[in-house]
Image (tube, rainbow, N blue to C red; front, side):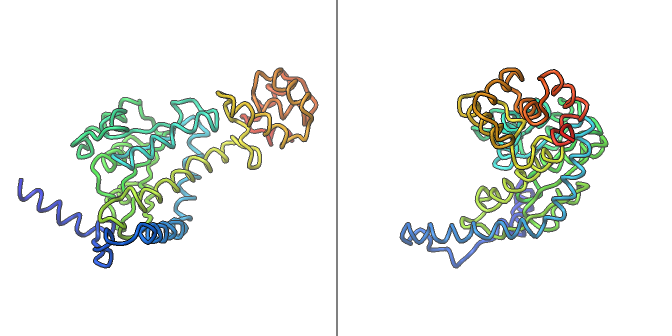
Length: 305
């Protein structure tokens, strides 16, 4: 056991995300405003680290969108903060893009209860990751994104290895160079943000970097799939008052129509924003608009032309 922990300690010591910064050793003695300034300055470096990996991110997104266009799913797999970020991104896709909850999935080591409470030891199991993916009935059309700041977390690495063996597309998102996770995936994305303000606290810059990249993967994939019209969320699911108001505003921005016409179109379209926009812009009824959207694979711009 001592040997095992010694090996793990040596592995962590070699990671950029775990590096100790002696210049911050007295941070607890600084005024609050100065700590906030330091933290803000650290966070400001993250976008540049992401920008350095944009070609790799774009290639991964194009490959993901191509498979999802043929019926595949997008699956995130991670432990701890990385897993929670995947669950968060997946859970926001249905209301934003009207996706089925099974289309974008977040897997976290230890299961749903691990979102709020740490499940000790779950992240150390490659077998658990394989079992979670098998529970989804993984297919070669699916995309699995392993997320891990260290790039060595067994659950994330195991998910990518198992998915790749099943023929699925694999993406490995890490925050250290030369990571096992990126090496295991077809598309390795290593966003190197450097040592954290608090030694090893990878929910900070690393977590921010992961959130930015996951935002890109889901959002741009949905743009590629025709889930938007320009920069309008025309597939938004109006499940509450705020989203119902947003739906009407989106129709107004897309069509420049008056309130009465917008209400009539949305009523006839059963609340479907895309359908209402097509009705107003093409001057067709709801049935015709629905048929044209189906023929265009749900892409509003194609249905209009």
